[in-house]
Length: 441
Image (cartoon, rainbow, N blue to C red):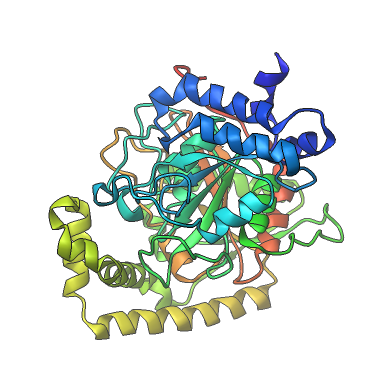
């Protein structure tokens, strides 16, 4: 394998180290990933806007004066729900065709400052809702990649970018990462700043990240969030404490999915981890409905200009959300917010007392759905998003069709480093098996 073609298989951290050490240039890295995009994106269609000349111009600037930076030369995919000053920002909607913001979103600006090269804009569903895109799953081109961060998950899984940005309001990072076989990370709500993100539901919207390994997603997220690096554990080999939490939504998971999760829990025990069971209070059974209430109520009001001025350019799926949102009373919305706030406090204290580092759950009900008419069901993600808890999915399980399925780790609010450490511990003992459709591999 030539050096240029091998660059696309490097970790983001190795890419930056090589650029900083002078082993290769940011331009060489960028050209390698652009070549990969040129070769396969006609089939995957992960990119909404990909301008090779602009990407190479950024890479040359890094080679000229941007070395000794932690993301030096790392190509990044940015979900087309974030503002970018040099690429169109269309939010997955014809209403904003050709729209050019004046400034980058905060996370994009911070990634650039760390030396990253914005390779292009990845496809997003319409306003990050549930209208499917044309993006295909790189593991099976006849299946959905999930949504709403469809393009970001597909681009990373297909080695068209080592890392990418997404967002989650229901399950829009964790589910597509599960379907496509990538690592997905949704931080604690409020940690990543959402300035420059097109808002949908402001009490739920969270910046998220995709990579092919835990180390990359941890470093990329910290740098793009403007946070300090995650602290290193005193003993990285110390076994984490996990708990399986069978929520009211588990009935939505396929029977084979639950069996695989329980079998993997046994493997974790054999590897030395403690895996217990934990039961939610009965009052938590309404959390998924509360999430849907809050999301519909806030989205309908956030998109008032679009709803009132361009209804003909809004999809039937979006109009269905508007219809529900307009039917909800302020009282409905307030009651959902109260339940969410009470449940956050209760669960945080439950997990603290139990000494649990991470809850374990399926990342999605099953494998990616056949066809492109649906992005799948976020039912196994709604509660955690509503509770503002950090979540990470690892492509550790394999479904009946041989496609990847994610193991979801959920942590306590503000304790993101705990699930990062737990995920690294798992990753070191259970390597991922990459799956790509033979038509693009």
